[in-house]
Length: 548
Image 1 (cartoon, one colour):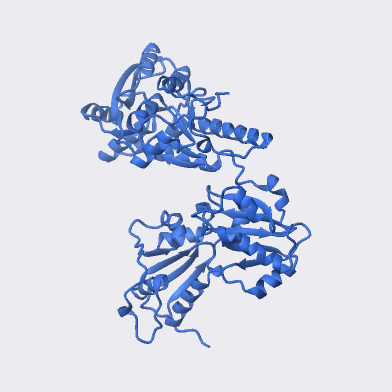
Image 2: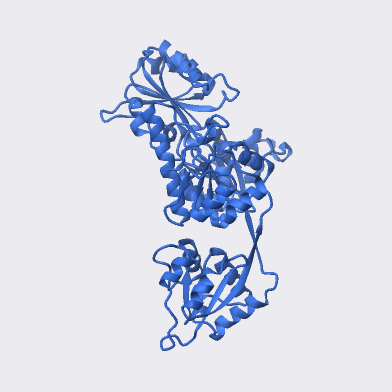
């Protein structure tokens, strides 16, 4: 049969595999297709995974069916998702149809492809990582050993007696897609088909996400294992799981191969009370440790009440008034950059001016602006650290004796006093104001006060004061991590017990310290033979471990 000629008036459909849940498993081609989509039609389970890569203007229809009146009489009626796909494609749109896992494992998607082919609508397929393959990998369960074995994939929803009998009678590794409350029934089918009741089995729910949990059992004991773990009976029994069955699936070695669930902060909900821009890189680092980062702005940045001082200083940069400009925060860089753009200036205005920066993120913000800092503290990333490396004014080598210091309205005087002592004149300019942010949603406030978070990272004394002021004091089961002694002192003054202290005043070192704390806590539980739990899973009111 010859394929239908392309319908040049129609759009194009991309059938895209979004993987089993981890956003990092999207392919580069998938991200490219999402960026050019006019219409995004996604399985609910992966909508949040793919939507972040689509254009802000992308249409995401969520209704179950399209207008059947728009379908030609000679075209079979398609309902629900398929109808949405076809309607958008007929209208000339670029459609991305995103599915969980891989499109090749989805029979419904195959029907949608056939519908496109029957009308001559151009389509392409972007493979994704199937849940049956990706979830065992994240659970630490290789499907084959060095000697090799057959692997059979079974969808319990459609498997018939013949399928169960064939898989049960073989020694192949069976990867069974089913639901939590149907696992025991699938195990029984395999035993009836010939598998021994003591055949190893793993069951993984919410695979590749930070909600992932895996249980090791046998075909004969899986019902008791899930009951003992208080997983079943459950109102969530209908959620999908991947079960791996077989003597050669390395289930017995999961204690050594479980790389994902053994991350130091796996599944921890960590509160990051900073502005969204400041929290981004820190949140990425926490995710790499297995945590779920929740950003709560505690301060808002606003322009100075009287902008004239800032305007004069920026004009002074252009006219050669300053020898140095010192940035102590990302917000200071942002404030100066915005003023530059307002005047039509760019990084070339810094020509001939020495630039200092406190902190890695401040330096990165300058580089993004096109400015390479001349001075970054070699030691402590603070005003004191900057003063340690700042050269004294020398009338022979320094033609100008003035420093421009754009800062927050609540900045301390340490840096100004130190520069003056080194012989410099300082224009200490309010570049921005910091004000307390609005309270977070009620759900977040309740989680903070009720022990819903496993840890909170305090990066300054102001974040302590502001978080307590807008949301209340964190529950006593929540691990408190502070960036330095001053922040820890403020936390203790507010009745919080500090568990983790960063060895250096760096947000990334703080995150590392929290990960070390989580790893030590996990190792202690394993050594004691106790289940590994998150701090928020402790008994309400129980005491927290002392700071080590």
